[in-house]
Length: 84
Image (cartoon, rainbow, N blue to C red):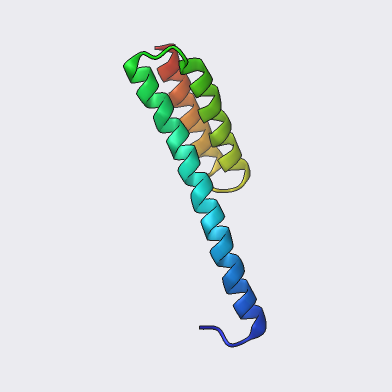
């Protein structure tokens, strides 16, 4: 445990940031999985799910949770899968 006041505050901040980042990353993964499952099942709302997944990936990249190249790669793969 930290003893210095600033280190204590920083530890609390890190815990909050970790929870927030984990939640957002999990939400992004969930939206991508929903799109994948809908595409496999042949659902009607695949385009809406693609847009939601793409937005979630962009949001995660803008927050620094994933790198820009990974975001572009994921979106490209989803777009190719949508067109197939």
